[in-house]
Image (cartoon, helix red, strand yellow):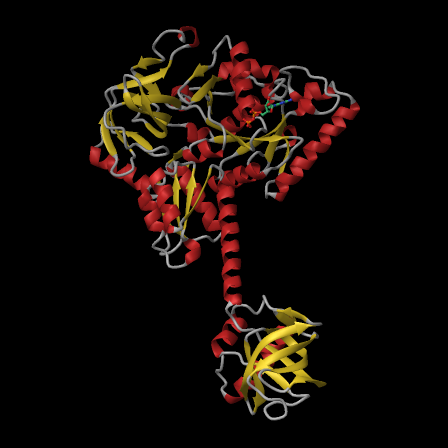
Amino acid sequence: MSDADTTDDPGDLRTPIVAVLGHVDHGKTSLLDKIRGSAVIEGEAGAITQHIGATAVPLDTVSEVAGSLVDPTEFDLPGLLFIDTPGHHSFSTLRSRGGALADIAILVVDVNDGFQPQTEEAVRILKDTGTPFVVAANKVDTTPGWNPNPDSPIQQTYEAQSDRARSDLDEALYELIGEMSDHGFSSDLYWRVQNFQKNVGVIPVSAETGEGVPDLLTVLMGLAQRYMKAEMEVDVAGPGAGTVLEVKDEQGFGKTVDVILYDGTVRSGDTVVVGAQNDPIVTEVRALLKPRELAEIRTEKRFDDVDSMQAAAGLKIAAPDLDDAMPGAPVRVVGDRSVEEVVAEVEAELAEVAVETEEEGVVVKADTLGSLEALVNALEEAEIPVMSAEVGDVAPRDVAMATTVDEDKHHVLLGFNVDVLPAAAEKAENEDVRIFDSDVIYQLVEDYEAFVEERERAQKEAIFENIRRPARFRILKDHVFRQNDPAVVGVEVVSGTLKRNTPVGLMEGNDVDRVGVVKGIQDQGEDVDEARAGNRVSVSIDGPTVGRDIEEGDELWVDLPEKHAKVLDQELSDEIPADEREALKSYLDIMRKRDPFWGK
Ligand code: GDP
């Protein structure tokens, strides 16, 4: 017992920060509301507290909600702090010292809908950041024949269901566990999980009826207590460290920053360093604000002024010079260190996100540092080169940057969750820069890839139009319809594609001896543009006289310029039909007998 007081002093353990992620409409907001709602109803002992951008559920309240599932004496962490804005965008924005700010995440998956694109994106981000998470298999109440037992633990309500409902739910849950495995995570229903570091716990819940919510809170609390206690041991009285969630104009205060504080304490009057678009801002906290209590919400003032706040917490800082502050950027209390030291620390943290850029590639803009990083990571994974990456709206100079790329296909700007300024849109239009904007990362990657594919196809088509195609054809016996001016003869195309306006000749030695130009092609009396291998058509050839320059039974070749042969051979050989490839190959073989490097 003797030294337990110093090591287990709850004053030195901060609240774990919890984020909620998942596909749209799978119930993230409803689940957060439910947690807040049940906490309000049950939580007479501790009650929840509303922070700026976050909700704190103290341990007492967790144990009230969890009932028999939680024995509060097993815990010494103060509770859980839920970030109010769900989704991977907020998750990516909220970074701390290079990692994710959230200590634990809840991945919400509609049990009937399973993995969806944003579920996959969330899983990837969780994997990248190494954030422990649990899966809330939501909407269990939509199982056919479900008989709800509001707010009860999941196993209790599960036992009370019909066999049919139970087996339907089981099936959906196993499918979900299978999908988790497809994405590289071994998972199981949480009560079967022995080691939460190896297996992800799946918790069936309903955000509608509150069933399973006691289990969810219990598992989160248990996970944090068992595996994260060391990370929660911070010097809560020390200089505060946090992350900018949003930069907002607030009446009476000017520009303010909403901050999630994950370490230490901030006091009114403290000197703080805030990460910004350019140099870090050094300023003094004029006011620390938190939301007014619910009872007082009708009063004019929306915020309460407080003297200090301790991690973990969400708060608003009013201070001069915050205009350039950047969402996702670090906030540090200077404390008894030197301002230079703290500025250097903030700069170093910002530099971590500085993206490695290529000389040519896409121009990337995003609304926060974290989302910029997440987008650039996704682009890297898709092997899409990035030329520049910055936080902020799309401005004309970004468009100008995009035009510096040589390669046409990379005149592209990708904007994530940002506005395109009208002047930038106009410039892009005039200078043929494509801007893609979306608030879904995978959408941007997909749009870009589809665009490049389309462009390349169009480019190939344009090349095709201007390139002569190889062909070889034979003059048929008894098919001379006109001797000359032009000669008109019946032919059979042996291989390749014979087009109009193509110079043709006889193969003499190892070269084509040009005899004239195919002017027109007729197939059964109809004018056509081309004839394919196997076709018998009549052609008019400007230049030769039958009987003198060409004869019945002669084989003629399209006279292929070396450059065209090279492009066909090296770039388009997948695009041309097999017989044309064959014609090209024979042609190259003949030419290379004379000059081994012909067309290389
Ligand atoms: P979000 O986009 O992930 O935040 O999803 P919402 O919380 O907005 O939920 C989307 C829809 O699903 C809403 O109409 C909710 O009422 C509904 N919903 C969410 N959770 C549940 C649940 O557990 N059961 C049922 N029946 N409906 C739910």
